[in-house]
Image (tube, rainbow over all chains, first blue to last red; front, side, top):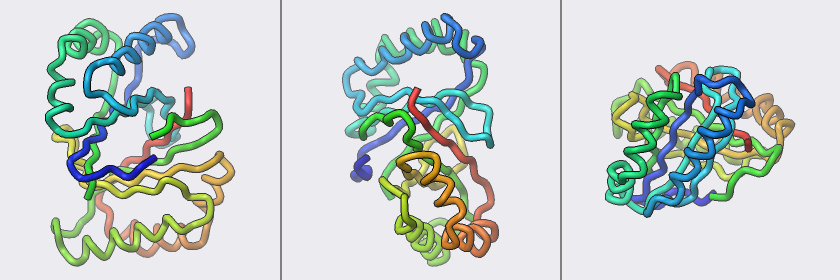
Length: 103
Length: 103
């Protein structure tokens, strides 16, 4: 994992779904979520399990952008907006965003 | 940033210090924090700024371990234990741990 270079942005979200663990609904959400990787500007896209016993989040999403403009363009991209409206708001019960930049 | 391979652990912490932004005390803490990178088993060590407007954390620490045993050994290493006791508990006002594994 390279250290972030100045100007670059890493965007993270930890979240929990309303679906039972290992359910088809969970798998379907994660599949739709993973398709965000194809939005222009998205780099180093990962979906992982969140496993700390010190919080209740179950999944983690991490991606990088070359700069703030690319991050903004992703946020406003119709595929991202549709995913948030049609899936995220309906199926995610709790989440937290964490964004990283170089010191 | 490579995707995590099964068995590998990424350990993250977001945190806020009691020190004023840009103060010598802040710089001294971050310098001591960065020395955790030399503990055996620690890989891909990063200290970054946390910049999301949706939370109040100011810094982020991320590191990786080859496996859970390496992570446990780091947690128990005298240099880590001393850092937590002597610096973290006295100077960190809020934090959250986030740990990642492959799906």
